[in-house]
Length: 283
Image 1 (cartoon, rainbow, N blue to C red):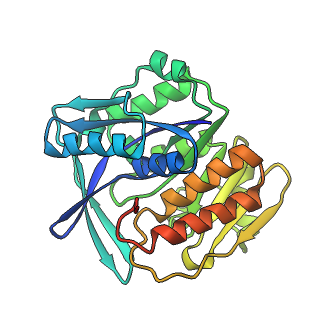
Image 2 (cartoon, rainbow, N blue to C red; image 1 turned 45 degrees about the vertical axis):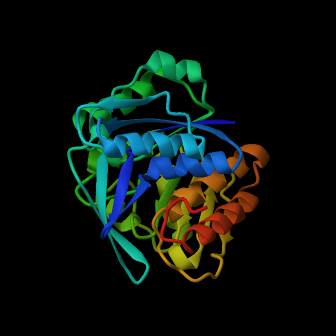
């Protein structure tokens, strides 16, 4: 079970604390902890944070062969947490905005799943890297967490996710922002909404619709089945990285068993653990 993700390596800045993060890095680390091999395509700067990031990847067991050291600064994000809910100010430019893709080496890695989102597409060069991989490489699944961050997404980056994902993750907070682009018809209820998204993009097989304390809904576009998974009740410290852990646990279980209900419960359990800590990748 091999998973390959492309995206940002970021240090989340909480006041005077700097914590390693970035959605694809969090995702890969949790995939490794869930029993998969995972590699990350990204960029870091030739600076102290860049050295620390590479050390963290080794610690987490994430393959860093596709991480380039470039002249730009390692990514940073100012995180403000209010009542457990984070808001993000992603600094730009950053090293990961300058990455390129060696599609021959990526094809040789032979990943089962390729994962990407919108933030890595915010600059022309890194967006081209994503498109080159989609064009030149083949995967059993393409996993997309749209992961909308203020001023870091647009219609094109969202469309690229929707037009290529076989498994799409979308949160209830993000969906209204996505629907503004008019990609799919509006709906009067949740099941109809997920059906409309899948009808508009025939490549989508599964939709993971996460709803914070209200759990998640998993829609199978092939069977029309919808599975509701309850969120585990825990004391919330921070929701930073909760979605990334849910995605990793769900995906690794689904790849092994094909059971979406069991995979959803695994995702809920791991995300409940993560929100009990400030860090996105707690011990």
